[in-house]
Structures are given as C-alpha cells and as structure tokens.
Image: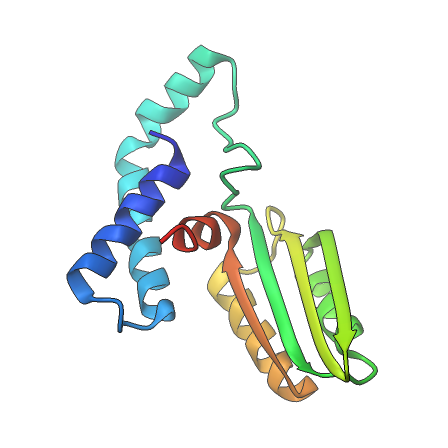
Length: 155
C-alpha cells in the first residue's frame, strides 16, 4: 500500500470517528502519530521490499513526501514577508523547492514547497516557528507535511 493511500485511510477513519467538525490541526496530529506507529511496525518489511524493487522507498512526487512541507502565507501585502519566511527556512537548513506568490488588490498570498530532509528541527518545531513569525509579520502562515497535505485534501 502506498504511503499516501495509508495516510488517506487513516485520515478518513479519524474523520469518520470524530466527525468533520473536528479541527484540522487535531486530525493532522492524530494521523501523524498513528502513521508513525504504523511506519515503525512496517519499516522492516517496507525497506526490504524497496530494496527488492531496487528503490529507496521514497514516495513519488504525486503522492507527496514526508520530507517536504507545504507552507501557505496569507495577509495584507507589505515588504519583508518573503524575506521573513525564507529566513526561517534558511536558518532551519531547509531548501525552497518551489515558490509562488501573488498580490491581488493589496492582499498577499504565497505557497512554498520546502525540502525539510536536512532540517535542524522537527516538523512541529518548524511549524511553530513559522506560525509565530506570521504573527510578527502580520500574516497567517499554515505549514503541513506534503504527504499529509495531499492525503487530507483528498477527503
């Protein structure tokens, strides 16, 4: 079973059990915790299967990666937003894979795909730093692992 499919099934089960009124942050944390437990118990089997197939066990880009993060930034436009977010990623040793930003009638929107494989901090710590930076910059910043983002948006 592909990792995205497993995450989707876990996410679907969490929403089925808790209802759609539960907040996405709670669902994301539950899915992450469950996925980590499942991954630990299946890692030996998966890694040997990946070696048998000649692969490294990485997901395809269509499924998303646990080593990439989707970062969305929204707010009123002003100088320093891109620099502020980029600085946090640089300090954490994360690379920007793709970035798209636009300003529509003074409203700023940006999406960044960042490679977190060499990050000096956990995903939770990085998300927390980005969220606090957003408050300092006067924008809202939402960050999520790419594989969880893709699976949760299939629901």
